[in-house]
Length: 169
Image 1 (cartoon, one colour):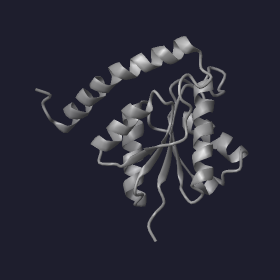
Image 2 (cartoon, rainbow, N blue to C red; image 1 turned 120 degrees about the vertical axis):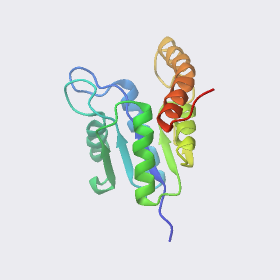
Image 3 (cartoon, helix red, strand yellow; image 1 turned 180 degrees about the vertical axis):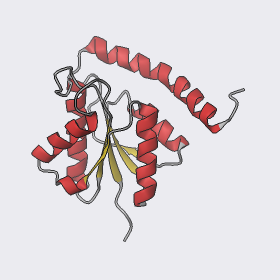
């Protein structure tokens, strides 16, 4: 019997009072949907501590447990501070567990970059549940984040190539 996929929830901001942002709440919801669709799949909660307080991963785990996901299904990556590090953690966990692919749980605008970075790490992926468009976020914020993602792709590719010792010429 082959291993199940690995569900990965990508972090988002934690408010100064230690509560999840709306973006993090949406991503937790996407991860919960994926966990229900794939009851044998472990869930990697990925996101460290960006400001003093709880990690993104620990907030995700607490919310998932409150909603019925058994704690033994959860793996916490509390070291990753950005998407590149989240992807590296997902790749390492997928390799350790022999998972055939990763189910990516994040915002729709974030999925193309995550999946491209996973592919560059040699990891097959599928988009997890997500809402198209702003998904309840303010439209101006959603548009801004969509534009930011477009700029982040070439930056992340340059970072990855530099780390591999490949000249981007």
